[in-house]
Image 1 (cartoon, one colour):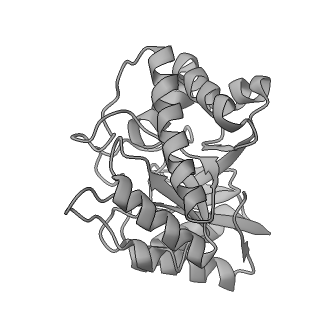
Image 2 (spheres, rainbow, N blue to C red; image 1 turned 180 degrees about the horizontal axis):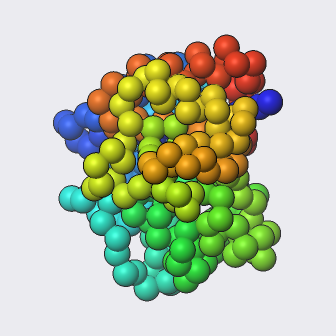
Image 3 (spheres, one colour; image 1 turned 90 degrees about the vertical axis):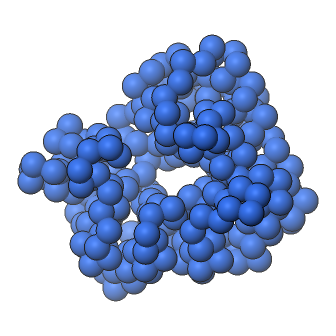
Length: 251
């Protein structure tokens, strides 16, 4: 069994730093690099891409709404053409920097509110897929099972990859519990690691109400901006390896 382990990186801005990117790059196989719209800046993007290339970690463009103040977690109604242009702008910028550092963007993962919105909004999903197709239709989009992105991307010839979240609570319907709800984010390394192993080996996770929910995952996400993120990521990696899972990037 092969699983990718991804985390959000490069989410500093100016003199402000968030998370320990260097430590996480020793753990994950794919790095979702912030593109400057919810976090990140040119220097941070350059350093993150260079470090990922040095460690053989796949680089993904983590595109988002233009929302630095809200860290990309506020849902926005953006015209489809404008959203397409903004996603293309972010993707092209990070890919250009990644190539200058000796790598390239090998997938796209929307961030925060945009990620959740395009799971259920065909118009915005179409705008994101169109931006990816404009830049490079071979780039996979990382999204949840059941997302509206899958059908739209399939029509446009853009591949998709499904992921699960080791450190996020799930509803009985298989969606993520909103971040503002109590218990939405899990912080205990042992608990998160057990969930990740079960996701990978049994394709199931317990929802907040205790019911088992089927999940598909070629990639498992651990967030880089939560307290103790490095410990969580290491626990997940160790748990997966101990369970006989091979860790390898999907792109």
